[in-house]
Image (cartoon, rainbow, N blue to C red; front, side, top):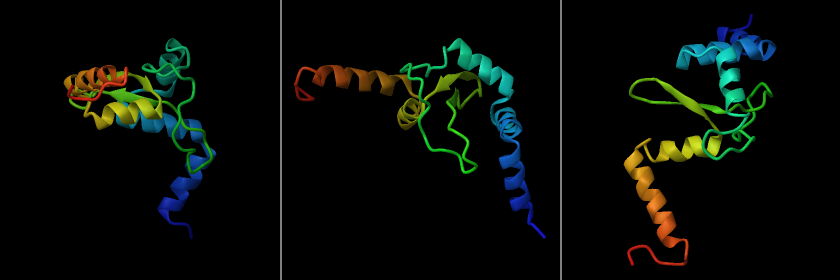
Length: 118
């Protein structure tokens, strides 16, 4: 007899759209149709870098990766859909606008071959 985890895995593999819908609703209060409309509004691109490639790893069931749902970790409000790299980038900077501004200033100050701290 199959264990519950195996049954769930089988169901997810056979129902990828329903599985994605469940995940989006549970974690972000967002239906799959709303996700699809958001992506269409963003022209099928990342809200930050505008790539059409979501990046990241292929799902265990072989499903292609999707754009990440970016949301405020304090309020839960969904902001947009991001590619893997942009999602990880702002996550590593703790979603902090001041740190992100400092990172921009740093990159700009070193673009012309300058050394940080000059």
